[in-house]
Image 1 (cartoon, rainbow, N blue to C red):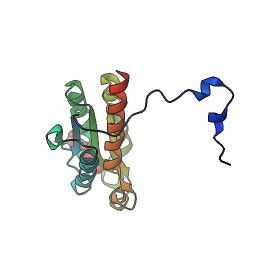
Image 2 (cartoon, rainbow, N blue to C red):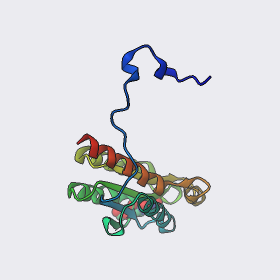
Image 3 (cartoon, protein in one colour):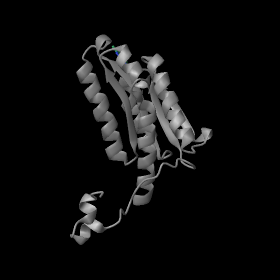
Image 4 (cartoon, rainbow, N blue to C red):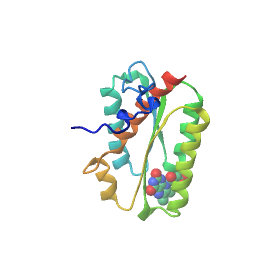
Length: 170
Ligand code: DLZ
């Protein structure tokens, strides 16, 4: 038969029901999307993925604010301003860093990731991380709606779930 692992444990604490679980309902909540124009052929597809996820989760068109910034480097400051405004249940960040054309790629990427993470931690507003780091354009395209899904869709779904969890924890 099916082995249920710790659900069959004799430790009574293990049999406690899940107390808090997020759902994927975005209805009635506002979301911001920060999207870099650099490598727009790909970031536009990530944006489509995020909008698709929000729409399918019940978010209204008027409840989504799209902010275009020049490149990935500019994402953290815009995300932070949006998060600090307290107008949004979540912020989705979208960008593409291609190693081939980016000097100091690692340094830029590290700062962008750190800045987005810091904005999330210091504001308490969920930030979806949809900043791709790829060696080639082909790898990036694969992650923007071709062979490897759409990371913009995935980032939006994670934010929708976290916004729900935050609403229940608050
Ligand atoms: C300058 C630059 C380079 C070389 N490569 C990228 C990239 O691959 N992806 C990206 O989003 N942005 C890139 N940028 C632009 C920087 O993010 C930033 O917009 C500029 O340095 C201006 O501050």
